[in-house]
Image (cartoon, rainbow, N blue to C red; front, top):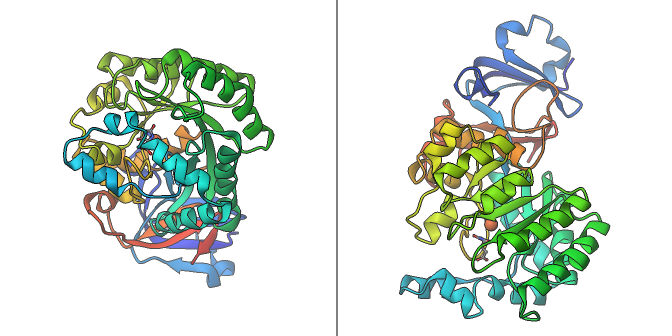
Amino acid sequence: MWDALFINAEIATMRAGGAPYGLISDGAVGVKGGAIAFVGPMRDLGADIGDVARNVHDVGGDLITPGLIDCHTHLVWAGERSGEFEVRLLGTSYEDIAAAGGGIMATVAATREASEEALFDAAMTRLQDFLAEGVTTIEIKSGYGLDIEPELKILRVARALEDEDNIRVRTTFLGAHALPPAFDDRDAYIDFVCNEMLPAAHDEGLVDAVDGFCETIGFSPDQIERVFEKAAALDLPVKLHAEQLSDQGGARLAANYGALSADHLEYLAAKDAAALAEAGTVAVLLPGAYYYLRETQKPPVAAMRKAGVNMAVATDCNPGTSPTTSVLLAMNMACTFFDLTAEEALAGVTRNAAKALGLDDCGVIDVGKRADLAIWDARRPAELVASVGQNPLLARLFGGALCP
Ligand code: DI6
Ligand code: FE
């Protein structure tokens, strides 16, 4: 039998291929040993639920979804960048600020200065917002250290967050995020990333995936390719910040390397959608960065949909281009700005977000999957997507345990 049973629920299982949202009305979810042991209509439960009687939760028609997954964040940083926001309002571009040594480098300077404890506390405060919105898995990138010790510090903090709270953390090494001041040659820095930083982080067991910033103000496709080669040699999956500010062909490169995801993609050429679909590379849409940079170029969502690309949605939580901790807001923006359907937005933070992290034990409600669930004060899945700045979460279940 079950450790706990949730009855009278509207269940958005997010299983692909069936009813919209994989919806089960008048449903029940049974949990055992941290996994889902039953999901289906109440009428399939049978009469024998007696021995879990104390752990039967009647949710009275409320909505249950998979726990949400944010598959792209830069959660661990120090300092703040409101001054940049002010000058951007007056017309200075994000690239101009980067060229003048601000932007990512401003956060790198503050993050290098900060102690591991201070970084942990700041990140933990942000993490609470994610938990409050029903997030059960979060990806966290390094990339604000850009030297061995500070990169390791960020990744250690990310791992420590997982130890401390009821959350699953996937770490991504983003050494190839920007050129640090100690280097004036991008190729030499990439050598350092490949030969020293990435191996050091990997040796400590701190890396689940490897990412890069393929951009005029970041690194060229050739330089990123060297990072991907090193990742392959270490048997680590790759992801890429691609086509955020210009079309560099990064998404094609990512697809060639069988990347888990290509992220941003505002400047993706529609014809390149096919390469992502073929490789099974998830397109991670980050509408918060689009909004905050007041971008006008939109990712080619219709072409990606037509090509059969799996699309995920994430916050990109970072101090410079997307200072938000709200997955629900990202879902809404993915619809209003990028024309996702409400169902695509919810799939983007559940089923497809799991794919973008290479996880196949979460992101849908199905027998055998982890019992990571969110219970909402809502009757229809679209309610989660349709509101702005509201949070109807009632409860979060992590590995079968109800979290406070
Ligand atoms: N693209 C982004 O939007 C973040 N990193 C990246 O490669 C922003 C990083 C920052 O401005 O701090
Ligand atoms: Fe990012």
